[in-house]
Amino acid sequence: MSLFHPPAWFPPQLAFLWPLIWVQVLMLRAQIRAAYGRGVIYRWSVTPNLRVYLVRIEWMPGQKKARAILKPAAHASDRLAAACDGRAATPEHLRTLPLNPPLAAANAGRSLALTSSKEKGLHLPLPET
Image (cartoon, rainbow, N blue to C red; front, side):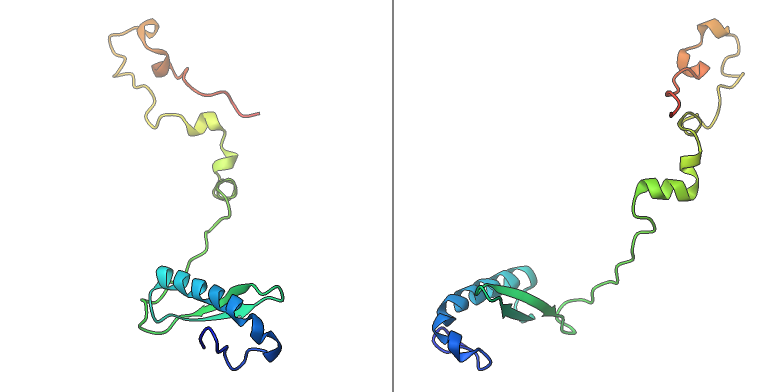
């Protein structure tokens, strides 16, 4: 297969258009070599409009390390995950409460009037509607 000799499987009625296709094949080969390296076996085809496209890339053993099997996400979105694990059922003002409420020991010796609004729990967001 070269510029003046199309592959054996190429239709003879399109042989006069082979130079136009050959340029696209060279560009495709350059892109594949840049992305995957030399020696990658790939398959290409031609559309009825004489556009060359990549059909598939065949992975050879030892050519690259084996692709890890991708594990699909447990949930499609964070909203769905929140609905499944119960976060969505809990109101927002309860989810943002501090783990340790203001302790009496922390406020010992101070009156409630002198404590900050955060310590009183007034920093909570508005409830969801």
